[in-house]
Image (cartoon, rainbow, N blue to C red):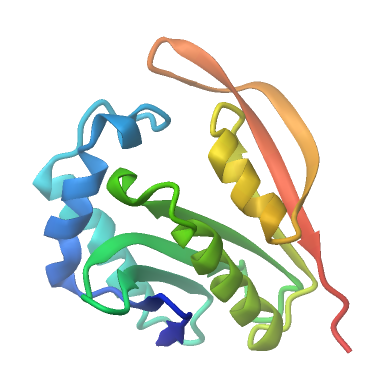
Length: 176
């Protein structure tokens, strides 16, 4: 599968993508908002293999794609959409971009592409996204893409010795 934007290509993962994922997932800026204290090669290989395995599901309901720079092919993150069943009217998105690439609009561009796929190809009516409330930049990405804040779950997650509030965003789409 391949989605194209002016600056990005979102493509299916291959097993060989794990070193690029490990490089950004080990960055302290990335780890600050995740439950992991560090990422090991074995854990990231399993993480990437999970996305590769999802490509073979029939029917496919999970599309987590590698985000690469169109000009160089460099893998800079991932972005995906998933739903519980092929007939579900609702899907959830998730995304992450390498910290070295933050602030360049790549997350917004990737999210726009995956939302477009959800609307045009999957024909979903409701698209949701969850994030920790401290991730203000991610909230901006969602808002730029037409998502609205629907709720805040206080002290929902517990990791790194503290509780984290979680925000739920959603975008509704009228499908003709």
